[in-house]
Image (cartoon, rainbow, N blue to C red; front, top):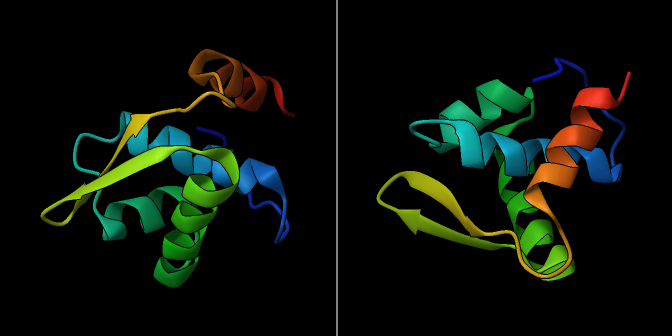
Length: 87
């Protein structure tokens, strides 16, 4: 994953979090924070935005957050390709 910080409100922050949730073996809040470089509260807020604004389904199982459905708006492969090509 590209190690870059995007400005607040940039949709790429949400994309980066979604990819992290789908790729990490144990996507805990600490792991997601470390992977994205965002504070834990920001990660929580961004998960809410993914759910509410992009219709992504995220479930919590114990301490892990799993992206279980990318919804009808986002295409996983398209998001991953976009983020890899974003230079």
